[in-house]
Image (cartoon, rainbow, N blue to C red; front, side, top):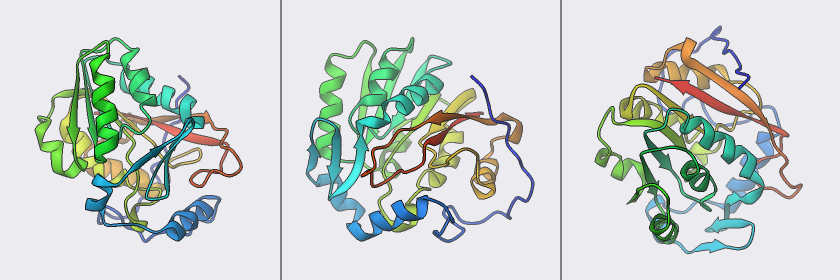
Length: 246
């Protein structure tokens, strides 16, 4: 992999998980932020029991575009990163099962899936029945179930949950960074749907450092993206795939 070296200049001071304030970012992400605000957000507890609407190419919940299959090459790369050390893999957000299938194609020991929505979690349980490696499905918001995963017990983490509030758009992963650091074994690897076009924003980078990751262990790979013109959540032709080592 060709890694991007991070630039740690101009760090902001330590702050709350989702500071600084929401957009504008001054780029194409402003458009997709407004799109999701216009759809509107329900209570996160309601999300758990909401109907999951699948078709051949997409998954929608409460009208939100949770996942689309054009993401497949990016999901493949995230799965490759997360499984690069083998062992126990923690995946947060099952979605359409795209990354889960790639995880199962790797040489691993165990696959833990965290999924908030009940109907999607049922899909994950069906997936588990025929999976090559053992799968454990934990249903609920990750904040509710993550304590079932012992600290310093996983070798790789792939985080790809959907933002459940306006504040989380394009940065819902920030709130998980400290937990990722706790759950990983020493030398474990962390990756996630970054919402970064080609490099870490200084605030994003500082969140990882504040969580305990060392700047020299924070890298990434820029992956080509080809979203359809009508995609509501991503417009750029690249996205950064994080490669973060504990």
